[in-house]
Length: 457
Image (cartoon, rainbow, N blue to C red):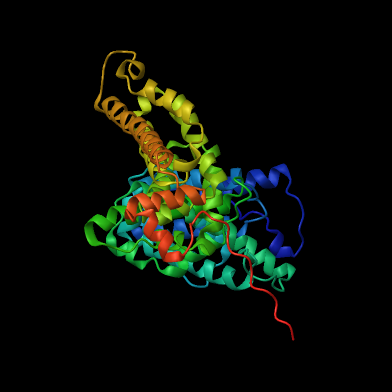
């Protein structure tokens, strides 16, 4: 016997809390929609999938309130035999639904959440997403949300306070919530799948501009904020890869060179760089710093405020000290950044924590200190070479600056007294003194003649 649809507060216009029995009935009914007994054709699978997603969306905010509820919705579908036997079709159908222009926000969120859970559970599903134009669908939805938020929210620090009503803010908050999931989904595509050049070419200036200028730099807890930040890092990485193939403009780098636009992004990057323990994010942030420090010398020298430069140096010293033996690739990345800092930034004037750096680099120059097992790998050898290079950069800088000081110290001093100046000039010109005396009518060392008498009127 088929279960009846669960009670809906929307149907009666009355909102009330659910009883335990009603909640149990809702989940039982939702699971019954995925019964694969009668689903033998694609049309039947389509009907069951749409009914499941539609029912879950209609109970959004009612039976489905927190992250645990939405995860349960996703897990029920992803573990159902009906879905497992028809995974490619189900993914294509959900992407097709997501592409509908006037799709309700509750259904957008449910579909996006299910797709994100699928791609995180099985990265091979990203290929299905890309095969069915998933990049375009997700990008277009995000673009719509960004355009709306750019116009009707106060997300951007530089914008004047707009006249935002309570209803406007509710809509904005829902858009941010859906966008957080879509941003994470796009991050998974860029980070863990082969992103085609055509997909990257869809990304326009406004998309990157909005993400960068709307960031907040005072928190690492805001999920929407973090999702935009991670996607910018992943986009930059893809631009670097594609630049070797097609010379595609790096829009992230272009806005990094605009301090007004990139101010919040760089402040958040320094905050995240100091706090995050995620190794892949650390490497992606290092790639941003590397791009800046390998640009023109004047940009590299003046890009970072001195305090920010000290923060980066502090983090590098800490991470280089604490990295384990099996993370030499990460240590190599940090050493490459350190070498650029030692040669191309204001560190050349401040010598911040120079002695500690020399001691650390001295330690890293020995393979025996890096590999306790004796199994020396190429990564260990790279570490020693990079450490030697950094140490040499410091020593060379000190030698050059000492040489400059020595040159200043041996410069000849000019004579200060009139007599010595005169004698120097005399010895140089070689004119006899008697000729000078006869020419001026008096000895050059005699007292000056008295002034002429005053005229009487």
